[in-house]
Image (cartoon, rainbow, N blue to C red; front, side):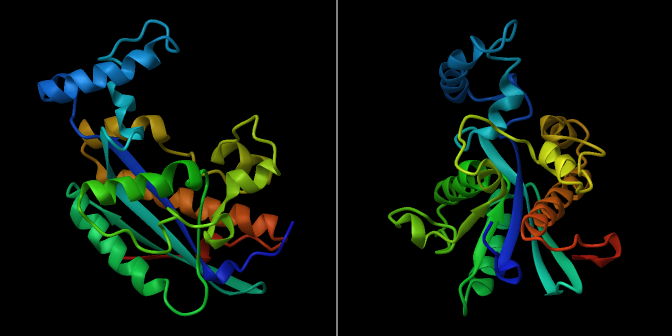
Length: 240
């Protein structure tokens, strides 16, 4: 396992929800488009319908929106390291994306910087790019992999690293954390509950906390893969 430049990595995680509270709240044109999309999913979910599958719409950038982006950077060295967290969250997706972009463009200057997420290459990074295009925003260079050669893309993915070239299986963040002895983040909600917590409970702070825990866990996993000690709970700092 190669050594990673951990202090030059921005760890991130996003939380997404369907754009509408319920299937019946969708405009008719969007409802027809969702029906077409979900028809291909129904056969894999016995007893489900276009309507009951709608809570899953948030995982598709065309039907969902981002409500939280949590980021973390490591500071210090192997003997004393801490992680600084910052979240961008709210109902106004364009605003939170603008704020995130501003931060990311500033952070990515200078020496080479990297992004890291768990399944980030398959989900978080492309989802962010798609929603930025939808919101008429420029994609920060460090995030945009379009047209780049593989070695020009400064993206790490703990899921991909754990596969070691084996593409037959998926390992969840929770399972990988437990396997490596990293404290699990799934002590309150999981991804399947975000839709309900956002649209029904209207409890965005709960989602932000959940998202930040995933960022910390992803960073801890990379440190573990790097042969370094884990970060103590008291060394986790959250910036407003």
